[in-house]
Structures are given as structure tokens and as C-alpha cells.
Length: 333
Image (cartoon, rainbow, N blue to C red; front, top):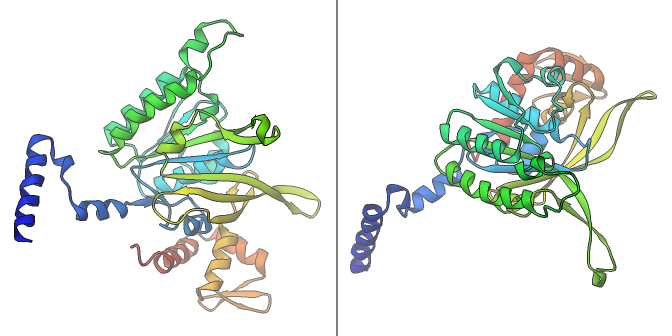
């Protein structure tokens, strides 16, 4: 056994000397990488479904789903949470559809947000790599992969056959970006669309749901979240928002396939107050007697009044969220 220990130390020191310190084999380093710092999604329910309290820094995350299902809203909430921690964020608006007023209503500080509209897929992916290497940006959002246009498509006439150029560029770029992430704590969020692809005859021409940009993003993403609309939120006869389901279809840091049912209010974003009220009651931070809610002896009223109180009192809300996070994720923290 002693001979093995000596031989192992010699081999490890030789690896470090011949290559670099990053090649050092260490179980402590491996398990340390499992406890990456996280950034909240802005939804405690979704943070619970992710199993680690949020999205891991230094990793790639993909958010995908049908159009108008809340993907951009979720991405803006992630930026908001990163800014609350004092981080710098970049929003690469490929679709040219970012509404600054919506971002501000969600809570994003647009004056402290880097916004760019790159003119080609190559330029955008180079920007992502440069920002990642700098180590100064905490969150980069690419919205969206489906809108990335390779330079070759821009230069030629419409109608030419340029099959799989986008996926080839994504494959090459993600290899480089993934290497840069090994030395960075940047969280990169790719927003993506889904398309229907008709399968072969042996599957009776069944339509299969696929994401844009090829398979490289699916491979390199540490977490993949699929968003789908499940219904509408209404106040009397007026539609005021969406009900969505977020499924964690891939998770390299916790058990996957967990779901979170969320509500999104038009013009405000995720209904955080509703889920915080529910979780706080569940864990005894807010008391419920009949239809009334109580916090620290103060009567909040019924559900609507309690949610309104939390929305209007940031200090109380932040205190409850902090207590909930310390309780729900105490093993991790």
C-alpha cells in the first residue's frame, strides 16, 4: 500500500510538472467543483426543482420552449438576481426584441446592463468567449440561438442551400467557450426555440420536438430547462398572465426531471409573492388562520392582500426569502 501511495504521488507531481497545475488530480478539487456558487432564478420553486438553490456559475444553461412561453422573462429574472448580488451582466439581443421598460418593471437595472445586438453568429459567439475570458461578467444571456445568422447566409442570396452551417458554428464555438469557462465563474444562458421535425417512416411520420443549433448545446449545457404554457391567469374576465411549467430535463448537479409550476404576470414577471407566501406558510414563517395571514403578529389579510403587502414591502419580503433559502438549502450552504 505504501508503494502505491508513493507511486501515485510521483505520478501526480509528474503530471503537474509536465502539463500544468490544472491537470492536477485531486478528489478534493473534484468535490469542491460540485459546490459551485449559484445565482437564483428569481423563483424559489424553480430553485428547489434545480436541487442546488439556483443556476451554477461557470456553467452553460439552456432555456428552451415554444414562442411566448416566458423564456426571456425567466432570463431577465436571472439577470436581476445576479445584479442584486452586485454582479455585471450582458444581454446579447439577437432577436432585437428586448423591451427595456419590461426589463425595468421586472427589476433589472438597465443602466448597469451590457446590451448588444451582434450582426452575425460568429461575432456573437466571439463576444461570449471574450466576455467569459475576462472573468468580469457574472451572467451572459444569448437570446436566442434560433435567431443566430452565420455570416455566409448574410452574404449570399436567399434560397441557397447552406445546410447545418449554424450547428457547425455552434459546435466549434462551444468547444472554445467551454474551455474558457474552466477558468471563469460566468454563467452563460442560451435561450432557444423548439421546432417540429418529422421522423422517418418507421416511426409513422411522427413529429419530433427538436431545438435549434444542433446537438452541441445539448451536450455542453450543465442544465437544460424546458418551458411550456399550461394556462392563462385571469382577473375576472381579463387575461393578466400565463401559467407555465418549467421542467429540468437535464441536470449534471442534482437529480433531473423535476418540475416547477409558475405564474407570470404581464408587465411584472414571475409571481414571486404567491409562491413565497405558500412556502412561508408551509415552513411556519407566516401563519394562516382561516382566510387570514399573519407575519410577526401583524395581520396581512386574505391571499390577495397578503401578496400585495409582500409586493409593497421589499424589506419584509427579502427577510422571508432569506429565511426560506437558509432553511431550504441549509445542507448546501
